[in-house]
Amino acid sequence: MDESSVRAVGWARSLPTDTGPKAARDWAREHLETLGWTRSAPQTVDDVLLAVSELVTNAHVHARSTARLVMAWDSQCLHITVHDDDSGLPEPREFSHDRPGGRGLLLVDALADDWEARPCPYGKSVTACFCPVPAAEGEA
Image (cartoon, rainbow, N blue to C red; front, side, top):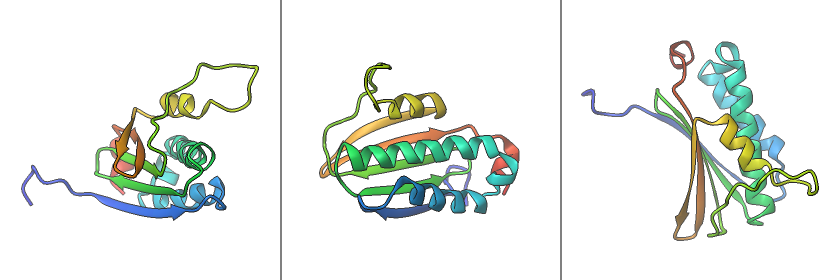
C-alpha cells in the first residue's frame, strides 16, 4: 500500500430513541478496548465516551430520532459521528444556571480536538475528532 493510502477501521451502530446513552457508551468502550486505549489512554477513553453520550442524547432529545453512531480510527484520529433525522444544525448555547441541559456541545467542544456539524440530505451528522492520539495509543 503506498503512503498516500489511508488505513482505517470503523464500526457503526443504530440506536433507536428507546436505547439510552449507556448502551452507546458500552458499545463504544468495547471498540476502544480493541484499540488498546482502555489500558494505554484511559483519560482519552473517558473523553470519547462522554462525547458519544452527549451526541447520542442530542439526537434522541432534540431530533427525536434514531442515532446512527459511527466510530472510525484512521491511525491518526478517532472520528465519532452521530447522524440523526433533523436537518437543523446544532449550535452551542451559552452556559446558564437557570435552565437544565444545553451543555452537550459545550462538553464536546471542550473534550474533542475538533468537531463539526454538516447537513445531509436526510438530516445531519455531527462529528467529533480526537487527535492526535499519542503513539502508545495508536500502536494497538
